[in-house]
Length: 112
Image 1 (cartoon, rainbow, N blue to C red):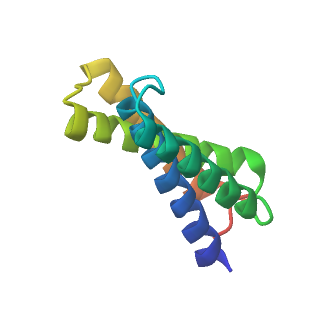
Image 2: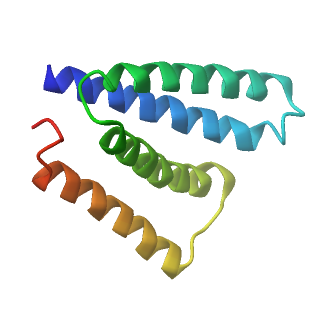
């Protein structure tokens, strides 16, 4: 079951990343199709996120979901929109990733 839970969580993160990327493209909900993608992607993401909560504590799920979402959105911002991060933002993002690794490697509440 562990791999299935992580697969659901990964899909939730990807849907959230797509929704947030579309949010930028929607230009504050003034463009129809990107706005539709935002709503659908977030609905899918929250549904999948809710399914993972059957097996993992909400704090751990949310830390992984939001943390990886931040990292992926920063990457999408760079690749799609040409947005760059300064050194403190890169260091902060690396610290977020480090926190997720610590949770996965050492936390007893995270399924292994």
